[in-house]
Image (cartoon, rainbow, N blue to C red; front, top):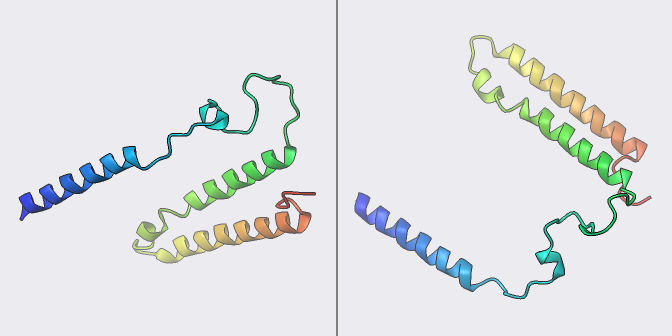
Length: 114
């Protein structure tokens, strides 16, 4: 049984590895050959204006992403002797995140184009 699963796994992974070399198109363009994927010319001036809107949306994403990470231990903590405190803190975090999202949306902070 174990050898059969091992043979199937090795065969499938070998087939997928071979297909991954054959299937992609081999037509590189200047963007794919560029070492940066941010949309800036790496050989140009470093003093180009940077979109503050892009920066603010990136910071908002990081803020909400890190706050959600605070909720990851909740399923394990909910199995403690008194899970009501865990549920209260999780509800507080989700409420603050929701209020922050509503505020940013109302202020127009999530609009990409002005």
